[in-house]
Image 1 (cartoon, helix red, strand yellow):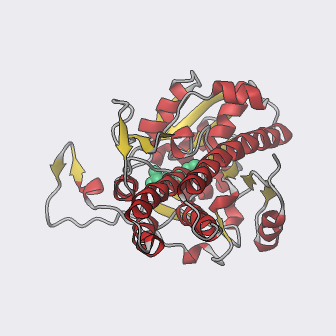
Image 2 (cartoon, helix red, strand yellow):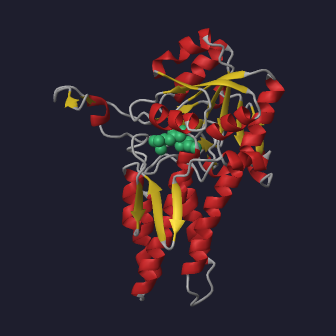
Image 3 (tube, protein in one colour):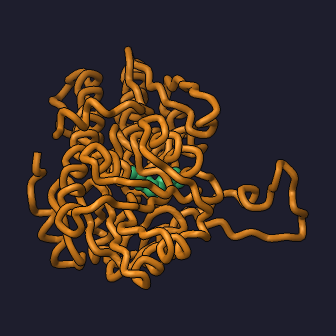
Length: 358
Ligand code: MRU
């Protein structure tokens, strides 16, 4: 199955070539496919902040390459380059606050730096570490896709109509996707009748990115307004809600794109199963519960501009871009280390002690 999955992969958003990081600019998809070249940590941090690259695993991978670019610069300057590198590290780590994959990837890069031998040229080692992070994310996605398909098969064998939110596809990861990876694999296995993609306001990751990814592989996709979700569950025979995650805390609470929480509430009410698909780099055992997750708020203009025109200076806006779904609304979390049904603190701790499955 793995070979068939890899052959089906068409979309790619991150490319590292000859010491330059290329990012497919997600702000202008699906209308234009433009690659932005980044040659410095500054440029990578800016690309993460402005969402040229987005999605939890993808921003971790981009940041890792950003640190490689910083090492190239700082090492060439000589002197105490490791001290100077801290500035680049801080800039990258502060680019976005919610997805823990950013911190995970940068910390892994920093640990690699600490393991360099005295006086060793860091460039090749750091480049190899970032490439390993990139490759292992794609590998994790293939493993999760297989596990997700097995779960769907176990619970209901027939054709599925599923609902997804935001974009947790190839665009948001090192390749293939997390939630969309499972959906893609289930489609290849002949198990998907139709995918409903919430448009995902205000940034429209669903209608602009998820619909584009699925349609480009001829997977039947229908875009719906976010507010149509409960109605769809009641009338369209949705069997699963399948989403990604930006951070999963020790007790199994899940931060993901704003609107995920209300989907989970509606799914519970309608008896629709709720699956979260995320690599273990998204799990943050340092935080006890979702209450501790920093929730990013983005610019009010995302809500206060309609058809390019402002709604007026006397109108306020509150624009949190993530929310937290409590563990008790989640049927299953799928990771590359295995699946956790009915997640709780003990089960997640056990999972994190396991090795990767492939
Ligand atoms: O603001 P974004 O587009 O970076 O938010 C992305 C999401 O919320 C995704 O669902 C999540 O990162 C998982 S991506 C595999």
